[in-house]
Image (tube, rainbow over all chains, first blue to last red):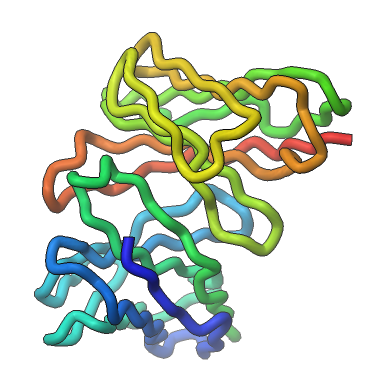
Length: 112
Length: 115
């Protein structure tokens, strides 16, 4: 997996958008960008993934730069329940048997 | 569906004891994984399996063993527990890893302390 770099912590006001950046400058052409989050020592929870195009689902949006060297996870209206550790992972999908490499992630704290 | 279940939730072991962490999934997923998470760190892959009868080592396999006799179950065995194995253990599963599509589903974890 390509190495990813994330800020160790971020703050966000409740109701505002939370924009979490991730750098993956050595990402390969066949590697996807995945985002997971872990709320208070629970098991990680999948959020979203993408290859080249921007993606959106009911939880978040993923914006990937055209050169694919960085991406941003957007939580459009952060709530207190979004306080968690967010992990950005670059992974080659089926060719790596789904094995994920977790870094230390970004601790997002949502304030009232 | 219950998803991925793990037992026990908590366990304290003495050095040198052995135990088996249980993991079961009811989603008919082929792929299953064991991770450990030390305090303040990300998860590290211990072992994984791509189907019944097929297992392989991850990043930190030493001190652990696994087996996969059924699609549903993927137990993790600790032999001769050591303090360095104090950690939270997560089991996960996913459908067969097609090119784009593999969300992993995680269990709630087993918190293990070795003293």
